[in-house]
Length: 305
Length: 261
Image (cartoon, rainbow over the protein chains, first blue to last red):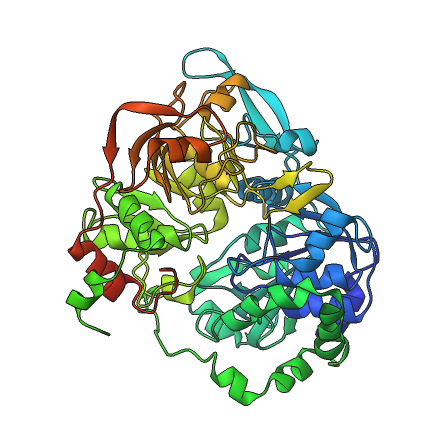
């Protein structure tokens, strides 16, 4: 399925859309296609709301954000997000604030069809006072010393659709990820529909030669989109490096609303699809993000004689 | 590169001082949860000096990193290649951190109070802030679960060392207790700033000034702190970075001065 078809089929106005990839394999190309197709009133769920979320905010796609970190990585600020929250400019943004493990637990509860997930965080924090989703319960079991134990819990999240980016998959959707594996598998299992975007489609035999590396089995996947370099400006371990210069540049671009809109015009609306975006960046640019080889040692799974 | 002798004759910058002091505090520690920037400098210097077996754990899931180059982010590809382990977010936060495997966590903040509670969410009201900060990330989890927490603050001002936080993102164990939940770790035990070092022993104790940097007066630190700062009975003066520490930091850890401002 093409990205255009996947977004058309799985993302509707008003939907809750999860885009996961913890600083690695960020599904940027999926976010850009959602912008091109002009979706509105989305709730975006993403642990680290960074550049692609700032872009979706600027494009007017998002009315609600669920996140645990809203910054441009370690490279600065998200201009559009800050304008929305600090000045309701051009309109307010509903923001549900969690911590990282709070978000992980929401995906775990969603994936496992649990009513909530407990965690040893939040005691004494002001976060529960601004987020009614974070609640305290009494454990049904006594603590080690026999006393009643209280613990905070978070609710499940069930995105209408989750997008993740990965290195490779087979045609059925068995998806292999290596390097930072983040929260992608949990986010896929929590979702009603899941789209896996991959650097390359490989033969069934390639996947089956190394089944432990399959983090997302085909039964959890509704569509596979082949989209090389679709994680830029983040990276795909073993395929291309992070575009640190773009991260550094983003703070200045997004600080100026006119410049940000100009950027979207040129790089998102002005490109028909991600292949056009990749081509516009040019081969010389991509050569600058090339990585050398460091193959894993292989393991022997053995076979019955 | 110029020679080591010339290098050590250069004046010590604030970043160098903070990194060296933080590195020294890691002596005897086995596992440290570190972010990028000053904590990277401190942990890498500690591995070359006082804590050769130190396992550095990153929020991205990397455990036991052996980077070939200075990492630019917690997700830098150089942290993955050659690492001892890379785990999922569920394992990292659930089993590694909440499971109690981290000795020291490094945190930063826009504001800290006398109990070591931290604000990384907003300046002003949460609903309509004058500045929206990045938020917790994993800081709430690091504070709740690491045995102790070190904070490095480049700027020591009455606004950042606040009598009352605008918002408490990341509570220390005293606030956890007041909320009816027993703390797991000691919370913040060390705060290293441009002026000196503050310390607290654990639950029930507040930060007090234990050392001032050479040339800094107690009154200067008091004036820069937003609450009535307690002073340790035996106030020390920071031992400046040694030529060997400076040489390692400048020539081996961060030769391109990515973080050594």
